[in-house]
Length: 167
Image (cartoon, rainbow, N blue to C red; front, side):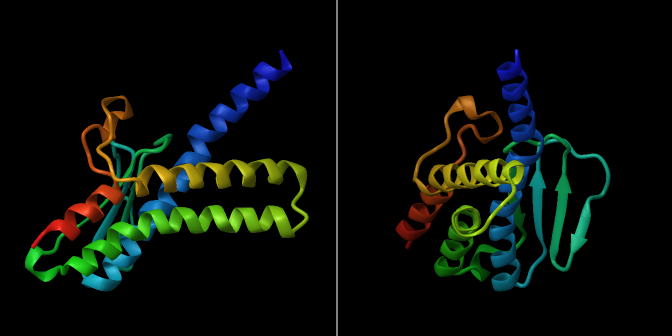
């Protein structure tokens, strides 16, 4: 019974805290780079249903749905003529790089510091989730139907390749 309760607790922790956190860091990577390079307002959405107005920090507006899991998006409003290929590539690359950076920071914490046992597990879960998120988003492909809100959308890696192929 204890293993079942532990597994259930870990699952709830993943859905309610770890996946939204790693997704937020990933989307924040896109948003920071887009806001800096394009000088336009950028929006981060975690989840698919929103109540309220969210919060705005500088040029970044954030909407968060409780228990959003891994669903997150960012967008900006800029004319395509204003955005160069290199800026698009940097913006699409920033999300996966922030995920990789988060995983690396967690690995460094686990390797070189004395983290209390309960935090050790939490940091390890974040490290693994961020690494998986990095790999899933940097590999060029279209998301399959079983990924729900992402079904049919292009990964960041695929978007980078599409931009590079444009004339």
